[in-house]
Amino acid sequence: MRVRSGAHPILSSLADFARAGLRPRTPLAKAIVFVLCLKLVVILSMQALLQYGGARPVVDGSAVSRLIGPTPR
Picture 1 (tube, rainbow, N blue to C red):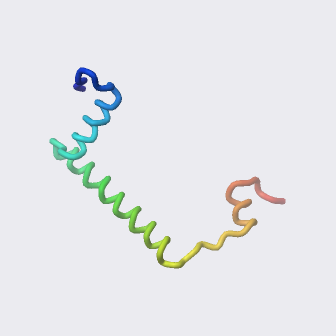
Picture 2: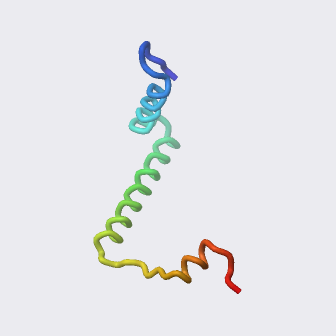
């Protein structure tokens, strides 16, 4: 970790982390960056599909209570 004089150590660490992600040096790091970028694209496309597709999931009170609450008897 390089700490520049006058720079905050946390910001310097984040900058080094970003630089490592932009220019990965090993094949494993390149594969990890590729998979993370692919996941980001999939998540954004799913969000766009749900946002602009007009489809809204149907959720009622019983579904919410079933998922987050105790089982009703």
